[in-house]
Amino acid sequence: MQGGALLEKLIAGRWIAGVSTGDAIAAAKEFNRHGISGIINYLGEEISSEDEVESTVKKYISIIDTISSTHTSADISLKLSQLGQNIDESLARRSYKKILSHASSRKVFVWLDMETYDKVEDTINIFLDIERKGKSGICIQSYLKRSASDIKRLSEYGAIVRLVKGAYTAPYDIAYSSRELTTKNYYALMDYLFRNSHKFTIATHDKDITLKALRLNKWYRRDITHAMLKGIHNQYAVELAKGGENVSIYIPFGEKWKEYAFRRISEGSNMHLVINSLFENQKI
Ligand SMILES: Cc1cc2nc3c(=O)[nH]c(=O)nc-3n(C[C@H](O)[C@H](O)[C@H](O)COP(=O)(O)OP(=O)(O)OC[C@H]3O[C@@H](n4cnc5c(N)ncnc54)[C@H](O)[C@@H]3O)c2cc1C
Image 1: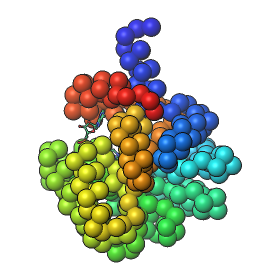
Image 2: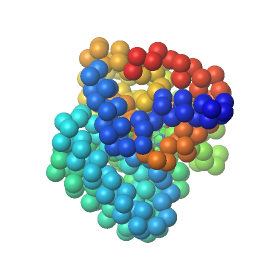
Image 3: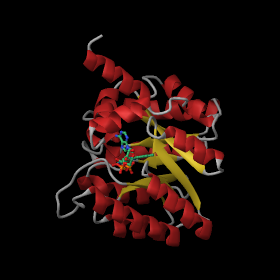
């Protein structure tokens, strides 16, 4: 095998559960054994045909059924661009509604991933129009300057937020220009959530943030979950779960794994992060 192909395979195995629903469920079950829940994501974004949207909806419905029939502790997380947001907003709304209604009948929680900055307003509007209280949640990114007001709006509504730094870039007038400023804003948004929201998810591998969240929660006693991506600092996730914390791992799977793997690589501020994550304690 060529070096590039070998690295590709290593990365895929570490960060992606595999190509089938069975692979994703097996990965979630493995985390469940450590007291950790899964967040299953079927890879694929920027879908451009109605047929593809239809088959994605069917796929999510069958994932929900499998989570339920196998008694797996797992949510699902999806992107509106998988549901036709770039083709026709009403198609995305209908598709999301269908998945959400099926998921709530099977008691499976649904997360909306957040994508590029130009989709944020529509994503929040669609979420708030269709959300069924307590049955779904939405991701908010600290790299965007608008997120303070978005979190306020969502908290006032009682929505469940998953706070991340953000995996995309945006023009300097709407986004924080450095990792330091994005992290500083993360702390500010997290602080707001502790003061104003009862249930939310701190999704990060930044241990300083996690430690601060643990300290704050001794005082606020909120229903918080710590979430990480499959393959990054998962041993730390196990330790948190052992200590009694709610922990979830985001588990992507599907045929379109290459785009995801390369996004993860380009995010690592340099190659040694990626290599470290590959050779981190591999017990899980
Ligand atoms: C559960 C979950 C759901 C997410 N959902 C979304 C979403 O819907 N939309 C969105 O835009 N983003 C999403 N993200 C990604 C997120 O925005 C960040 O890009 C990602 O989590 C890295 O930021 P960080 O908070 O871990 O902090 P960073 O400061 O980037 O990293 C902190 C430490 O984590 C480790 N680390 C981080 N990234 C890597 C990497 N690629 N390889 C190896 N080690 C690494 C390193 O040790 C680093 O020092 C999600 C992340 C998680 C955990």
